[in-house]
Image 1 (spheres, rainbow, N blue to C red):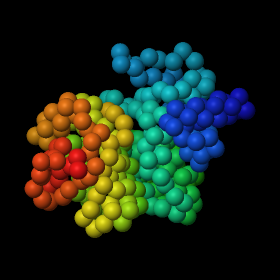
Image 2: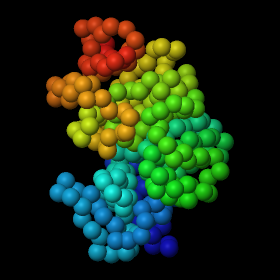
Image 3: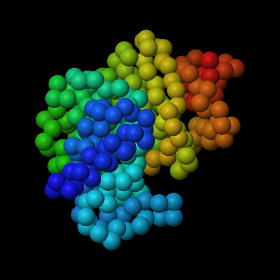
Length: 275
């Protein structure tokens, strides 16, 4: 056990350093104190690569403390995502003790557990997972956190609680109205804006005023599509916008008005501006 704890500590320091997070952060402490193996099912584990999955030839949990994507052992490409990507996202969310977080696409709860540690026992985490078996596993895995509630349903549909941060781990072709409407003042929405089955990027939206939203892309990403959050027509426009390569120029989100010449991409009821 002490050996695995040493692996976990090195992993936490490596992941957060790769993400540009200063040493000694609460994010590093959350990674270091969370046994990844408890959320991934029994060995052998399947590690995702561009050429398909590679099966581990060891039942030693040490193999999991690398910057790798691991199958959740469920039909389809449902995985426990890349740790460095999530570390970058957690840093951008800048969670504080006592805040309320909504987690959409919780899987078996590994990154939900990190959220729970970052907001502390005075905070609240509402986790949504549409796959019943994964939701059941998440409920068991997160039983030690009384301030976490797992809902076995879509997080792309109302109702959602008002929150300080909303973290989505499934690809959407639009910032859904139900997500934007759930944000408190200074609330942050972070999700992968992407066409179905094509790469996109993590988009951070912050509610600056009632209908004023800043927006910026963090890093390229690709997740499994979010059920109920993909529109084919919008996805086609989105794919074309990403191919232009200027997504880093996005600065704001507008709702329910006509796009102007600064528009990077638009969909029904929203558009992203480069001004």
